[in-house]
Each structure stands twice: as C-alpha cells, then as structure tokens.
Image (cartoon, rainbow, N blue to C red; front, side):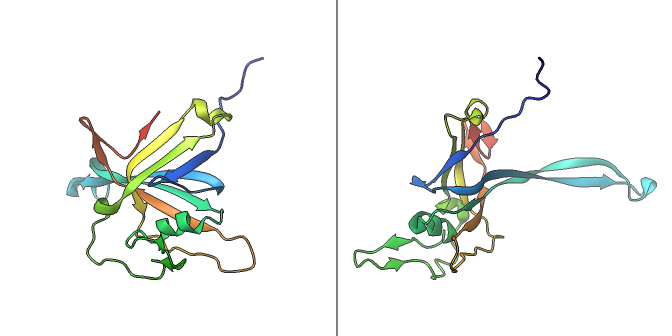
Length: 172
C-alpha cells in the first residue's frame, strides 16, 4: 500500500548557552522573514516590475513550562547576568542591565536536538544557531499565579560565517 504523504513529527530538546531549558509546551517554531525592495516604474503605476533581495531575519519561538527558573529567566534577562549568589539570593531579575551593549557581543549558542527515539531524528537531527538572543520585540511575561508557570520566548538568530557561507543556523 502506498503512503499518501511523508510526514515528520517529534519533539526537540533545547540548550541555550550550555543550559538545558527543560520541557516546552508545544515544541518550537522556526520563523524566517525576508526583505525585498520593490522596483516600480511610473510607466506601470504601483505595479512592481522587479525586486531586490535585501536579506532577512530568523527566529525560533517556544513556550517553556518547566520550573527551572535559573535557565528560563536567564533567557528573559540577556543584558544582565542571572546568578544565584552564595547567599542563596538571586541577582539579576528586575535589573535593567548594561545600556549600550550589542546583541552580537552577548548572544549565545542555541541548540535544538531531536529526541532520538522519534521520527524527527531522521529529518533534522540538530539545529545549531551560534548567535541567539531573546528578541527585543518580545514582551516577556512570567505568570505569577496558582497555575503552571510558562515563559513564551522568541530567540533572534544572528547570522554568522561558516567557512565562506553566511547562515543563521546549521543543521545535521
């Protein structure tokens, strides 16, 4: 009997800057946006007659549900180090961080790895972004209520040079 479609499913684990991020609500979403400048001519009104590719941006979005506050809040506060001091008090959450820092300077590696026993492992086994950071357009919300806490996070992936190629991420 012939297969109607080849469909891949399966979850991924996430590590950000060597810290395991724990369970996610519904996996991850990889989002690519591209930018073009339309070329128009008075002879053709508002009709685009061509376009020039001007690059793009890449994002990975996920909702973390595990109560690993140290790992999760570290992504929510990328501009100041989140540390558990020897006095047992957390330092970092609630502080504004260093004004004037560049994202690329503090962006860290983000690695998604397919769970080996699931079908996704045969498609994209790993996705590695060398330069990832919480996107500036994200309003981070940590639910402080009598229900499971979750953190909706969008990482911006900055491009890097891999030999001679410029890419947002590498896959195996």
